[in-house]
Length: 431
Image 1 (cartoon, rainbow, N blue to C red):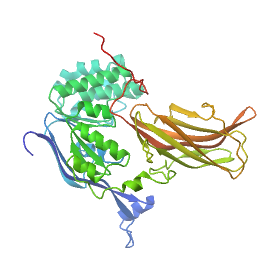
Image 2 (image 1 turned 135 degrees about the vertical axis):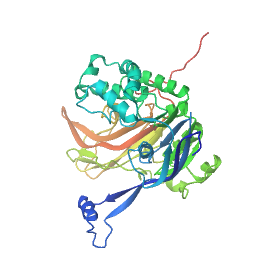
Image 3 (image 1 turned 120 degrees about the horizontal axis):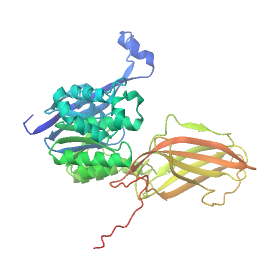
Image 4 (image 1 turned 180 degrees about the vertical axis):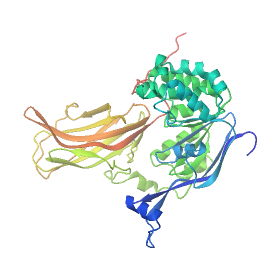
């Protein structure tokens, strides 16, 4: 590794053993396999290599399960690789799981010194940075109380303040900039900018393509544990969007100077001639309930090109499909969808009653297909989609079948605003 390289990753692989039954893990550890293989290998990473030069801001992007966080944990020493090598030249501060190194019985002050010592600072060096940390966290006299008494907001404020004000040579960030209220988030981004402009090295993982485009000098794109491509933020964000909607093919990769990792996808197959055949997984822990008079037997999400995908580009039309089988007569069924954030808060949704759609009665054995087409101007990120078929019996609201959190929904964008949706403002400078 030359003197201008801060982080060198070479042929990095991480393999986890997966077991069908929990007792198989015990049997294997005791050597009681009886000639059978009780586990199967899952590659979280497979042969990944890249360099981070000193003073660069490098982004790592990819779909869920692509190995982004695993790489960061290996670089910071939290996880040991199965094979390959990582070399680091410089003192690291990592924003992986905020507050992961905190002792809940210690006060805020004691945890500042504990974390600083773990990073490698002396007491005198922490003393020099203490006031900056206190000012940034801005939690008042709670700094002298055990952190177990903190609200979640105070906890993340202190954790972020410690990590980013400890003045490391390399900052590693995993989806940790958007913490606290909007004012604290603004302070975090300003500090991040200040850190970047001072010539420090940053390795940055995010689903926020706006931040990736704004801050990163280069970007590494991962998919299913493999490195797909590496290049400018614009090129890699464009490839990421194609990857999310199943359009990342050999021709596209070669256009930006990268060979495809493995065989190219069958484009005609990916477009899904059968629009009821979802090309994404349903939630394995889906919560369904209702009186059974109707049953949602199929659903799908289509992008603006009619492709089945649960990754939608903000500002483009998408269609939510639902197919309902009626087991008993329902006079005026109501069909609905709801999109929530990962905390379960309703973000948007509608139903045929709100939309004033005339819906006919359905007899037992009949099937109704429904489509909701709209443009989603929510912020980029991860959401959950729920579906339902309900009705009123007299004045009573009755749920016939509801699929709560039926699947995930990813909104992709290179621009976010304040709040949960984009007002699509037209901005004009008048002087």
